Image (cartoon, rainbow, N blue to C red; front, side, top):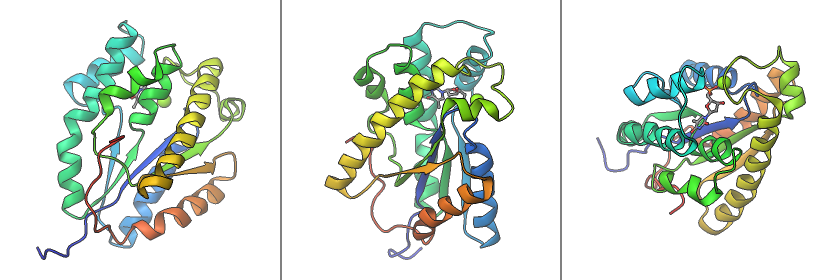
Length: 220
Ligand code: TMP
Ligand code: MG
């Protein structure tokens, strides 16, 4: 491997439940693969690990956990995959991540936990180079066949979650002005599937050739 070899970009997709994240992530992966660009899809929560199975059981209301406890489990689920994410990026593969620490803060803070307390356990995780926030009103999201059965899939919760995402959009933009890394782009997810796909591609395209700089640390 030559020393000039670029690393893969770390791209996160965030949004409310039913904002189209998973569909758009799958479409983007296909597009990149068709261009022979190495990409790996990572989903949080990753329900396949031991911690992930505890989270899954909580989300399906098969178990109850104190709000702080479940928050820390979501964060631990990211930390247990942090090294593997870094290795993948350093090997030149793009990581496309369906939810990350921003969901972690938004959903827990929506229950009344202090914002800074929610942020703390995720400080120093590998930082995304790009955050795509698929923005949709809870009303519109609900029209899409309605919410499922899982915890948090309620209009009132989603409304609070969206407000907190709005706060993070502003803070991340201010941070980006200063540091020039970790760009947050809000995409209008109420558009047609094709229009959202096109908007995402415009933003992602400059990142697909890889990046030369180091992987940053979240909120450091
Ligand atoms: P999913 O629908 O994308 O699988 O996510 C499951 C739920 O978990 C969703 O309502 C968002 C929530 N969540 C958190 O509360 N904290 C987190 O850190 C993450 C990644 C998701
Ligand atoms: Mg869901």
